[in-house]
Image (tube, protein in one colour):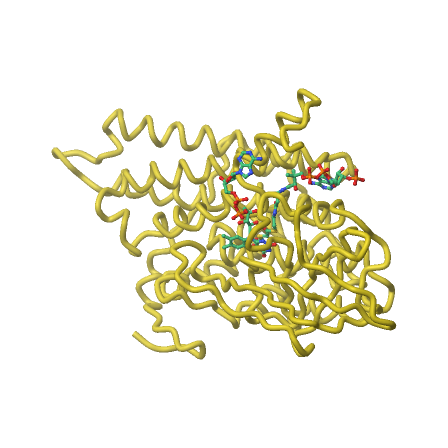
Length: 407
Ligand code: TGC
Ligand code: FAD
C-alpha cells in the first residue's frame, strides 16, 4: 500500500490485476460505428484501464476526488468532444461524445461526471450562449483542464422544479449583485468558475460566470455521500456577489438556457450508463464461470443464466437506443423528450443490472474486490441527477399525451 499526492492510500497492484474487463457487443454494434468513433472509444478504454481502474476503489472508499484526473481527462479529449476545436472541444460528432462517456462510466460514474459537467454544463453554455470575449477567456482553459468548472442550477428548495429558483440578481451599474444558494453541485469546492442560473428583477432566468475569488462567493463541500464518492460535490453560496455584466450570457433568457445544457449532458449519461452496466455484467459473467457451488460453476445454474441472459439483452437494447439517438443528434434532430427516454431507460437498466450482478457475486459482491457495489451506489445518484427517473417518465408522458403533469 502507498499514498499518492492526494493523500489516498492506493492498493494499486490488486486493482490493476483485477481489471479484466472485456467489452460486450452482442449485436455487432461496432460495425455501426466509424473508424474515428472506435479510435476515440479504444483510447479512452485504455486510459481508464491504466489511470482509473488501479485507483478508483481506493478513492471511492476514502471519499476523495482524484484531482490529477482533471488534466488527464483533458488530454484524452473528454471535455466537450463534440464542441469545435477552436473553442477547446474535440471537434468530433455526437456519437464520439457518446462512446467516450460510455468508457468513462465503465470506470466510474464520478469520473464521467467530472467530464460531463466540464464539457456539457460549463463549456457548452459558454459556447452556445456566451459572448466572444467569454468564449476566448474561458473555453481554452476549460478544454485544457487548466480551469475546472461547475454548473449551479439546483437549489436547496428547488430540485426537480428549477423554474422556482430564488437565487437572484439585481442591477448595480456595470455589475449585478448576486444572492442565493445552490445545492448538490458537482465539482463546486474545487471549481475555478461556476456557471450560475439566477432570476433577474423581471423574474427571467439568466446565466452567468462566477469566478471563485469574487468576494461573497463560497463553495463548501457536502460530506457523507454513499454514492459518487470519488466525485466532489458541494454548495454554492452567494452573499452580495458583484458579478460584472460582462460575465452574464448575452444570448439566452429563460429556463430553456439551463435545460438545453441538461439535454446535452443527459444524452452523454444515456451512453455512460451502458458502460457501468457492461462492467457489472462482465464481472458477473466471469465470476459465474469461475465460482463453483454444488460441484459446478454457478453459471451452469438456470437461475444464473436467466440473470446473465437478461442483462445482455437489456444492454443490447440500450446500445441500440443510444446508437439511434446518436444518429438523430448528429442530424440535429434528437428531441429533449427522446433524450429523456434514453437517459431514464438506460440508467434504470444499469442500476437493475448492478443489483443482479451483485447477487451473482454472492457475499463477494458487497466488497471492493469487485466494481459492482460501487457502480450500484453511483447509479443511485445517476438515477436522480439530471432529472429524476420519475421526472423523465413525466416528460415522456407529456410528449405522448400533449398533457402537462407539471402545471
Ligand atoms: P417548461 O415550461 O416545460 O420549459 C421551459 C422552457 O424550456 C424549454 N425546455 C427545454 N429546452 C431544451 N432542452 C430541454 N430538455 C427542455 N425542456 C424544456 C421549453 O420548451 C420552454 O421553452 P420556452 O421557449 O417555451 O420558454 O419548464 P417547467 O418549469 O415546466 O419544467 C419542466 C421540467 C420539470 C421537465 C424541467 O424543469 C426539468 O427537467 N426538471 C428536472 C431538473 C433537472 O434535471 N435538474 C438537473 C440539475 S443539473 C444536474 O443534475 C447535474 S449533475 C451532473 C453530473 O454530475 O454529471
Ligand atoms: P426533489 O425534486 O425534491 O424530488 C424528490 C422526489 O420527488 C423525487 O423522487 C422526484 O422524482 C419526486 N418528484 C418531484 N416532483 C415531482 C412531480 N412533479 N411528480 C412526481 N414526482 C415528483 N444539480 C446541479 O444543478 N448541478 C450539479 O452539478 C448537480 N450535481 C449533483 C450531484 C449529485 C451527487 C447529486 C445527488 C445531485 C446533483 N445535482 C446537481 C442535483 C440534482 O439534479 C437533483 O438532486 C435532482 O434534480 C432532484 O432534485 P432534488 O434532489 O431536490 O429532489
